[in-house]
Image (cartoon, rainbow, N blue to C red; front, side):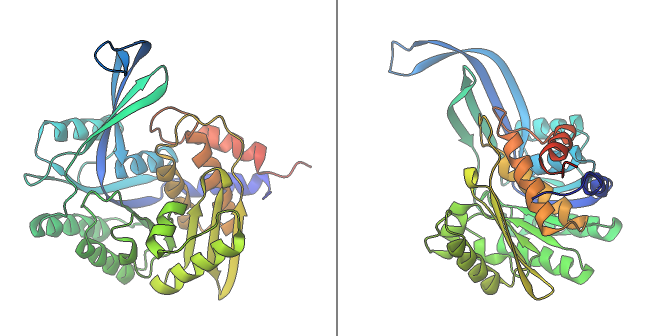
Length: 340
């Protein structure tokens, strides 16, 4: 897909100042980085000589980071524990300039943390500390009220559901917030997981990856066959009254199936060649870009092109990182514009 430099400029200006309400599972991504030069005498495993510890925002909080890095305003709503990790999470939000007004501390949960062991710039092991049961009724009510408070006090341009199957997005939370969004005419974008795959009825854009699409519909989908992608996407759109389905296909790129004024619009853009270091967080970046493109009323073609480009860029880094707006702009100008 090619466009003009003016369209790229307009797109990035359109992101600025947009208010994005984000609901979903948040976590801390903790990295233990070091050097490996020997095997343990106790077991056939590498010994990592620790050089650096680093904590970063993860899950729906990484989506908030991506939204902020693109010049928009993230409003994050979630539930964390009432533990020492919770304060670490709040401190990370404050460090990155993200409000904690939508964050609830619950004595019934722990704060999710993912420990990644990195040796010689390669991820060697991940250890997760979490509770993935659904929220209590009390916490559900509190979370819905926090979302409503934001909706009542701020003009929200788009809502993102970022689901990691950790229990924050329960059917009741989803249904309640969808009703609030519908009453206000606010578009909703979803990055789903298997558990609540069928709960997001009537949303504007639904963004599964290929595995999630297969599991959610319980059918086989061939990523190299556009007819197979079309059939699955149309099935999903009909079953859940979804206007647009965007499927991320890893190295095969991104596919979009969308209704535009009653007409089917399809876009399939292959991934750009990259030196892939880590795919962690790529989905967070794609949903962030797609949501802002929707809020800025960009074309389906440009939405897919920018989302695909951004998802690939963050995969060049080890660990979860938000998109670099300046680099995305530069690459969009280089790869997506018409040379005259």
